[in-house]
Length: 254
Ligand code: PML
Image (tube, rainbow, N blue to C red; front, side):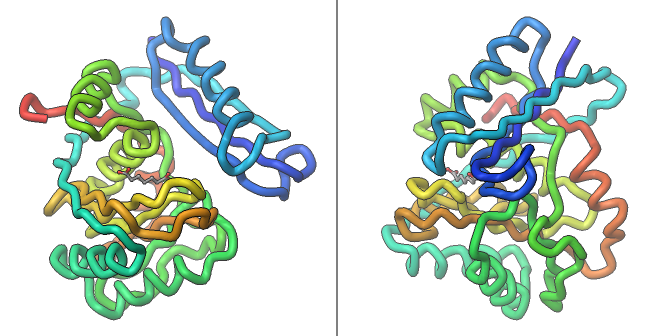
C-alpha cells in the first residue's frame, strides 16, 4: 500500500494560521518507509534555513493504485549563470524559446518581484496576453499529490549526475507534473530558501532548464508562475494540479 505524506509548517502564527511559512513537503511512499518519512519531515520543519517552525502539521493518507496517473520525468539541462541579472536574462530567453510572449514574461517577473513574502502556490498567467487567470491572490494555485515513482533509482542517478539534493528533486517532480497539465506551456520558479539561488524554467517542449543563479543570496522570497494556453479550462487545470495523484516515471535513458 502507498501512502501520501504531507507536511506544512509555520512560525509565529496561532494554530498554523498567520505567521511565516517555514516549509512544506510531500511524498508518496510505501508503507515500509512511512514512519521514517514522517520523522524526516518534522526534522525538516524544525531545522530549516527560514527558521524553526512552531506549528507543524503532518497528514498521512492511503493512496489506491486506481487513483494514480503516471507522467514522464522531464529531461534535464543546465544554464550556467553567476548573477541574478544573468539568470533573469537566461530565463527570459528560455521562456521566449518555449513560446511565451514578451508581455507574459514581463508580467511574470513583475509579479514575482512584487512579492514581499513567499507564496505556497503558483500564479497562473495566460502565456500570450499575460493576464492572471487564477483568482487566488497571494495564495496561488497549489500543486500537490505527486512524487517520483522509484525514489531509490532516481536519487542514485541524479546524485551521480551532480543533480542531487532535496530542492532539485522536489522541483523536478513538481515541474514534471505541471508540464503535463492540460493547457500547460511553461513554468518559471525560484526558491524561497534564502541560501538557494538556483531556479528553473520548465516545459514539456524542452524539459527542465535549471538556471544556476536566478536570485540574490539571502533573499527569502521565492515563487512560481505557471504559463498556460489561452482558453485553458481553469477548473480542470486547477483540479489536475491540486487533486490528481501523479507519480513521475523515469525513462530508461534518464
Ligand atoms: C523550491 O525550493 O521551491 C524551488 C527549488 C528550485 C530548484 C532548482 C534546482 O535546483 O534545480
